[in-house]
Amino acid sequence: MQFWRRRGHWSEGRAWAARAAAWAHAVDTPARLREKALGARVLLAYTDGGVVQARQAAEEWLAVQRSLADSHGIVAALTLLGDFVSGLGDYRRARSLLQEALALAQRSDFGIALPLS
Image (cartoon, rainbow, N blue to C red; front, side, top):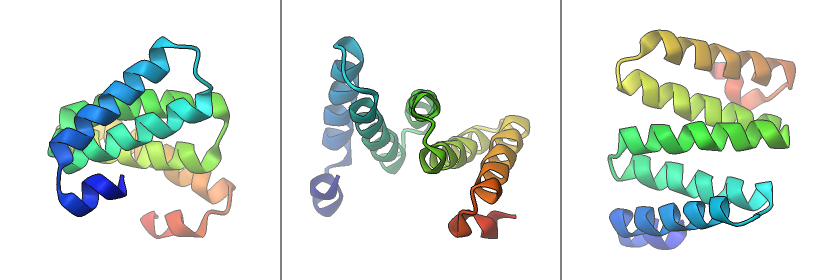
């Protein structure tokens, strides 16, 4: 991520992240490695202006986070996905996703998410 961010090569980074995520999905890759590849794909797609692609990647990323039962990851994925679907005009779904993220953050005592309330 740092390489693409520092040099501003978002499209190239997004292409590499998409390939890594596709490879991780195609072979029997551990969920934690898939999570890393999808997380990079989400952030690079969003930074490069691909909100639709970012939403699709965030949906996959959320599913992997849920399979890992990673509360921090689930909150992050729900928050980003809520932001993406809001940007696409689906405010009802955005509200639901963000409420779920806030509730999980509060149950898990994540101080960083509490300002969202």
